[in-house]
Image (cartoon, rainbow, N blue to C red; front, top):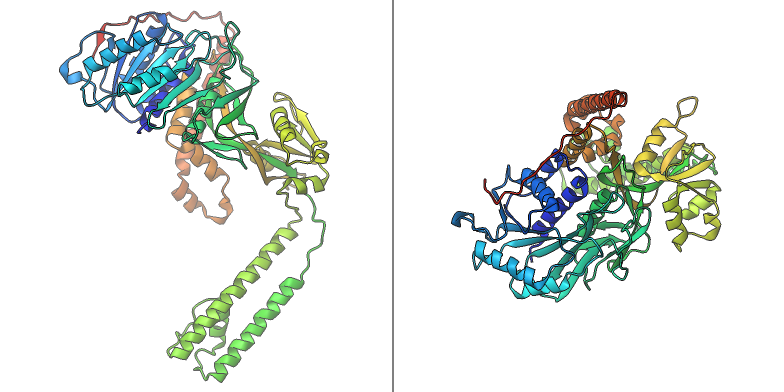
Length: 571
């Protein structure tokens, strides 16, 4: 069953809800940019009732979608023209903004409306947006009922339209697979808990994502790194935005019961955030001196083997009476180094000798390069730390954040002796970096510290180890009252949409010392990078000046933004 495109629409609307329901005075244009980037299809929105909540959603979706898509917006029950009929390439969005459940009677009205505006043999895709203001619901019976009526592509999105800043707008998504008789619900709550009349405030606490299906086809998990993919990853990205914090996977993940931890408390003055991609917690460790001096004997033995190989090749060429060209000293050296000789062999014996020599010389060259590589590593006076056992052997104290400390303490792979060396610090505490301790921090932050923390002579004091754990999602938070919030958000989304954020991160950490300047400019578009960075600085300075001036004047009253729900709006 083709659900991928409907899932894309679900997450688009979800982002609209989570980022914009608190902004009643204007519509965020960055969301318009995001919606327009999705695959274009016919979209018809049917509004059940004109009230403040449906008007807010209707205005948001209409201004974001109708300018580019062939979209129609109607009040339920109104007639549409024959050329605007829905087909299998149409997404029908129905909004139920006042219910805590969808009854069979309301579903029958919806089904009758779908039949009246669509072709009988071509069922459209359905996205039902259902309000949930008291408790997390189960939509299994509604989805089963629609499946029996031959509606195969249906997704129910459960939202909290009256939510406060302390609870997420997004609640759950419901999906049913009638071929396997399986109901799937992705939710941030345990369905055994009745949240009414309690506030659904889960910031800074653990929450559960349930995959109530035997095969769990909507998500993938790597137990070693804790990285998820598919719909589970998109769900985590959405939650990281809705929760205005960092979503971290725990060590006890499986595809039937995924538990996450939400880090970062919500502030009324800072409630707008953008997830910018995945990251890991990696070990930032001081550069340790080598404990064992380097042994030069392997290099000496390798050189002796090379000299012996040269003598064997010369003797073989003499015994087999190969021509003088093959015994030319320069040709012999070329053969040993795996380079084709200056004079190509002519006879069959010469060719066989050349092939055998090249194969032997290739093995010798690889061995010699491996010895030199080992020499370079050991002469750099660094010890490699790739496991918790090697970390324990260093004897260093390790500083970690509270969420990482809790996850490591729950892991059975780390001995208790090593856990005694871990020190937990709060997320907002300032950490002073010194060479007497190691640090588990974000991989991006660790690489920045590696390049910035230098000794008196400019040498690096820290290095990023390949011991990494706990994939998580990085989030940029923008102040709620900032007048330049939309501009900055649009710039962030555009850099992500065009792949610049990932490309810049990849290019920044590559070793540019092995390439000349022209290659860098040619391959990585540095001129574009400089332009974007310059524009970023300019926007930041403008935002700073605006906030500085605004703080010295009286509070400005925002104009009200009135929306009327039309009966029929056509392109």
